[in-house]
Length: 146
Image (tube, rainbow, N blue to C red):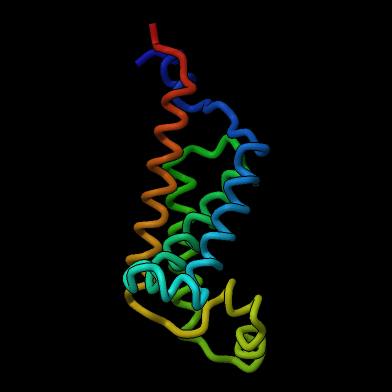
């Protein structure tokens, strides 16, 4: 394999931070909105139970690509999933300082309160959704290889 295709495959166009930032705000709003009483009254229970956790993983993905705009999709997805799973596993640890953080509303939103196996599935779905959309967007921006 020649060096030219390999170099082209490794260098991704940078994601525009001005594009990612509004998405981050939208994901936060949707995630918080999915937990409101109004959402619980008007949306199917499946959505209100699981959308917030999936959107949390989408947010982790967006934070990674915001911080590292040239990060390949595969690494962004792996990183987001790893961070999400580690965060969920941290909920099995109960130390006074962690429990004090989780008692705070913001701490609970970031760190969670209690371990649930279903959250791991939600994180995988959220990361897959974010990576899939990112791949589609990047594919539309790339010029043809001829």
